[in-house]
Image 1: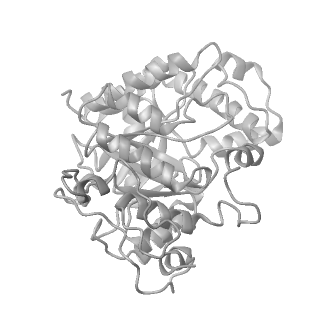
Image 2 (image 1 turned 180 degrees about the vertical axis):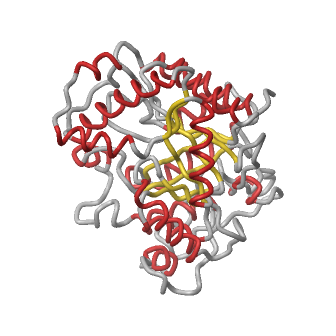
Length: 392
């Protein structure tokens, strides 16, 4: 294992002190593309994570149309970035191809940052990811984020089908994540060293096009974020001086510990001189608070089905109300719902303010799931109104 991979593979605070720099150089400070600015009365920048919900009676086409409308709304109301997440083999989620979705959204927006939250790197050859996001950078310069995760975003059987490119006898894809990340960063920066197995291989579009005779390509490439719901990615992001996005909406019980580890272990880099942590949080605002409760109940039924392997489309509130939870299911549903923020706009704003105060998050990325696209759109409007975000 080479020096860079060894540094990335460290899982404790006693990792090697010398970390090879894999960060990019650009005429625009990289930190400016990472850090968001608070608007209105919001305590920090607000962003959007779209889980691309496909509900009973709906279609993927309708979900993608809602995504375009939501991205436009987010841009108009001053949300900082709009991310989509990679999932596979889940009928209720239409986001198996983040790069395709980002390109589509880029064609319908002008300013808002677009990104993956994230690309599940073990599912893909690092070169392919570098090529895809180099292409996106060429489509929408200085607007693209590359969030990287090490979970499969699916079940083990689907992960195996996705990862057939891995050599027989190799370590598992997740265990090999540090090496994959090292390769990805090298391809993005076009600095694969001599003697490396991939020496002479270039991700195109990319910086190599500005280094050859007659080239004018900018060396800039999308900033990389590490995503996680535990301490592994928190510490890895800290050791590399990268921004960190924590999935509070998935693992709220781990939030404080992961953020503390990230901040305590952080090492300044060319990307960031100080830690920058974003939390993704479930936040659903409705005109009728009772409707928010009905949608959360539908979400709870969807969650219970997924955990038991009974995947389907996102259920309607009527379907959820007709389903009688047993005592164990009710306990799981109540615990899950206790971590969500939902109700009227002011109620959700108060919950977001409290979460930011408790965690010190530098940015909040809001996600919501509801049976109807218009409810998701309305939720972000109400939250924007509660914070006084102006319409551009």
